[in-house]
Image (cartoon, rainbow, N blue to C red; front, side, top):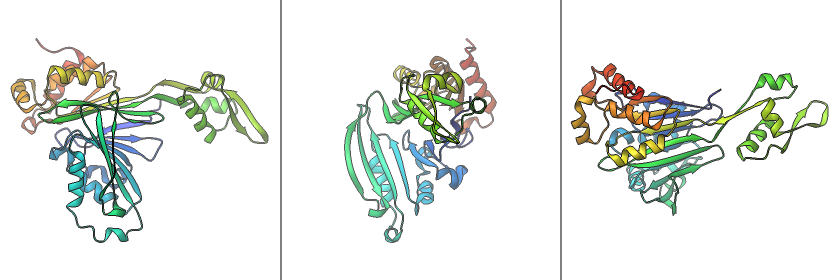
Length: 337
């Protein structure tokens, strides 16, 4: 099955946290956390439509300036989600620069910031280069079941974790994975083209199998009419979509554990911090971080298909293999007693 989304760590595991999710068939990407992002390069930064911030410690937010610099002078719209206080922090970050020349730009760059709260309340505001990034279009709303973005075929969900301050964990979910088998299309004499996108949208909307779609054929004015059911049998693959979970900077408490497992349930890719070795569990508790063993246990409990650890502590620079081994052993259920 051809993947539609490719997730990848922005930095090596000892670097700033961050996961970049590239859309394979659209000029778009989503970024989880905004630490040091120079490794992405301008081309990938310019693909960003959404940025999801866990919290604003410097290693999770310092990349805002580079992103801003790359996007300035272009017609772009970016959505940014974050924890309590993020609206004020973005506003102050933007206000720290002099913008006396920006109104001469022929382009408009807009950042829409959504501040999320543990009670399900949220505030949203826009910052436009046309109006010197003044806060505008403020609104309050409620989000339910942790869902902060719900589109035709993807959903973003959030969980609030405790890290001495609120820290957000995220799950990216493709609702359904719809693939066309080009070899079967060719065998049936059916063309590729925009009509396939219409079929895909109908499937994602849950249209009944009896719904008739029309495939354009050369020299045939009315085209070829086929039901969605027939297309599913012959040329379509429809399976559950991909799921990507991102968890960082969290204490190993019963509440956090429950929320993490619920959020990451059956994830295809589970990116999770593994800051300390198990021998440093006391230090991990003091710093409100996870050990490698705890990360592996959480991934196993969530039933993830694969676990990708990151955010290793610099104190373990010479022990990367050991960190990975502890994650893998716990994930496999082989934790020593």
